[in-house]
Amino acid sequence: MTLPRLAINLGKIEHNTRTLVTRLARSGISVMGVTKAVLGDPEIASALLGSGISGLGDSHIENIERMRRAGIQSEITLIRTPMLSQIDRVVRHADVSFNTELDVIAALSSAAKKANRMHGIVLMVELGDLREGIMPDDILKTVEATLGLPNIIFQGIGANLACLSGISPGDANMGALSELADSIDAKFGPITDIVSGGNSANIEWALSGADTGRINNLRLGEAILFGREALYRQPIDGLHQDAITLVAEVIEAKTKPSLPWGVIAQNAFGEIKQSSDSGPTSRAIAAIGRQDIDPAGISPPPGFKIIGTSSDHLVLDVGSDNVCVGDEITFQIDYSAFLRAMTSPFVGQVMESQANDVYSKQ
Ligand SMILES: *Cc1c(COP(=O)(O)O)cnc(C)c1O
Image 1 (tube, helix red, strand yellow):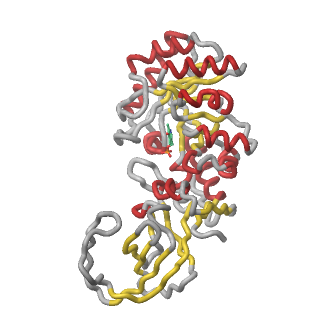
Image 2 (cartoon, rainbow, N blue to C red):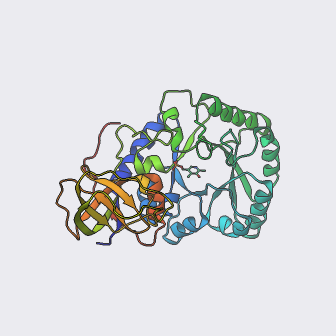
């Protein structure tokens, strides 16, 4: 089997998805499955679609086109405001897009008219994280302008927190989003169907028993794939944290001294390493490196320690384990290491479908 590889357990991803869909449904919240981290992988997208999500979302039109080429026909939302240079592709392949600029919405309108299609718009509202969003005071006039454009359907509003500044979703900012939905509907009639509160950072708030107001959708990637909320990266009860693991191959296994010798200067990454002498160490090199993963985001099996990582070598202290050349080592991986691994041409992906040790707790 290809090495290194991401082992992706579809059964566990389906379990995580279904559990989140069921729990959030109790608060009247639907789940958009976000596929950007898996680059729009059609098998994973299909697993999400079979597990109760209300639609798919991705930040890259290229990934959306990949899902369309694979025959996926369900609703797909572009969750990053479209590039003007990609408007025709957006109108052709995405049903809905998230938007913050009237010029872009006007371009979507002209392109949709030309293509004889309708395109849905969700307006993103700035709620303090200072990434994307229309300032709340400008929302009503932006809705009004959007409503006047041909081949455009205003579908609702959304917000994104905890991405750039780490601002937590809570009663205050989620309440403000609900109030905006109310004020839009008070002025223009009941037109705000979608009120999309945020991402995996919203899980704790949404499941806390708080009044979720008009919030009726969350867009989830990390929580589905890694079973963790995104504010403190705590495991979500009853979800698998190991649906995705990383497997790498050992290319050297030797006992070496723990202290380097010679004159110490910077290593390949500009760091000066301090080492202490703990006697001879059983070391192994796995054939993977910083080009493929974020070394801070992977954990070796119990009893192993990562000594260091260069572009293409990961050096481990394997403790008392008997590791041989050719052995496979399985690492736990986090979202940021996973993002890099998914975009490395050297890391393969292997799907597994059975759910090992399925949790039943809801
Ligand atoms: C990436 C992204 C998401 C999903 O975020 P997760 O933390 O992976 O759940 C949701 N909304 C937007 C706008 C995004 O860019």
